[in-house]
Length: 308
Image 1 (cartoon, rainbow, N blue to C red):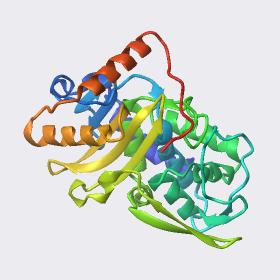
Image 2: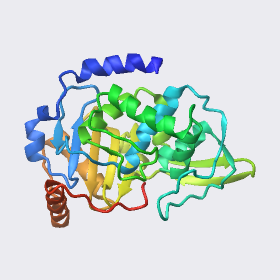
Image 3: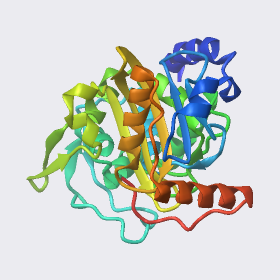
């Protein structure tokens, strides 16, 4: 992890004064968000512009794959190496689906690309299987890296996000975004709109699309993106995009509907541009109240088997 030392030192200097409690009070009071937990910040800045339950530890579904990408690139393993897709050594979550054939091969770069842009779970799993030391060493590296970044409320048990035991906070994920943003490949792979992956042994191709519709809109200028979903985690979106002429980190966790994170991103952008606070649908408010009550009672909903 030698090369990561410089990144860690830089982040330490940035994060010394960082606390979600320092979130901009106007953002907390005024901007209306459907997401139950959220954080908005300028890259590498100490204070959150918006913080909503930013310290609450919650499942993060496929947002996990941003850490997976960071560990892959930090390992230094060649991106052009062909990786065989091994049969899972541990059972996948029920109904977890993939079109990739066991035994086929794909370059590490393309495996990482489809894990990020299309949230391909089998791809993320196999990236971990081919890590020096294997799967367990990869998960250990994920947790060690989180600690080095100051993500003290974060824990990983798998590289896909299929487990609801992969947990973090909105504030911690801002730190993760700042770290992965230093690797251009992660931004490139995660914002690829469409991609055809060419496998070998046997030879076949599979087409993939990006799970974040905002990536397909030039007006958003999305430079990094990851979506996620488990029933326990709700709809999640983490991205870096251009708002009011600046790059902005947006972390939105646990929304009710498929479109809710996109609506929240729009409300944040409008708030930064005009000060307009926006409105949230009654159904989203009811969902938020239910989830807040659940966490207040120390409960946790049953997780879905799919993550996006």
